[in-house]
Structures are given as C-alpha cells and as structure tokens.
Image (cartoon, rainbow, N blue to C red; front, top):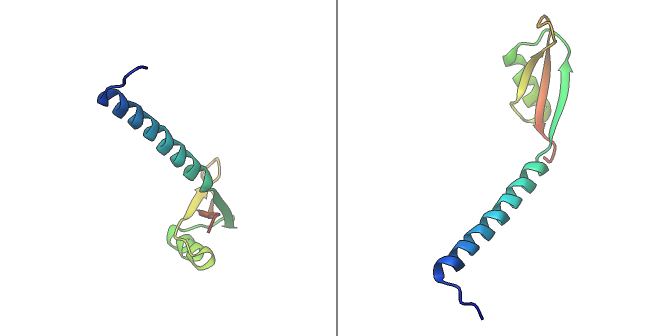
Length: 83
C-alpha cells in the first residue's frame, strides 16, 4: 500500500477545495441574471433616470444609454432579476 506524506495529502486537499470553491463561484455568477428595462427612449438625464429606476425597481442602477450615433440617450434600468 502506498504511503502519502503530509505534504502530498495537504496538496491534494487544497486542490480539491479550490475546485469546489471555483464551481460554487461559477454557479453563483450564473444565478445572478440581469434584467433591463428601457423607461423612456430619449431625453435621458443621469439623475432623473436613476431616480425613476429607484422608484420603479428599488434600484439605483439607471443608466443613460446612447444610440449608435450618440445623439439620442434612453433611460435604462438594470437590476438583478432574482429579487
């Protein structure tokens, strides 16, 4: 029967623990899905957008997102869907 030293046993335990923790982090990251809603399609100002997103979704992550030509800014609320 093979004998394992303390260092070998400790190394195997640490590698196994790291793999388990990595899997848990990946599962948690996949579980946090983001939802996005466009509140209004133009005329966005950051402060107003954050305030309206907070009123509607209780979250301060309202953002003004521009169109491709950066001439029109829409207010978009972004929040965790799991809530």
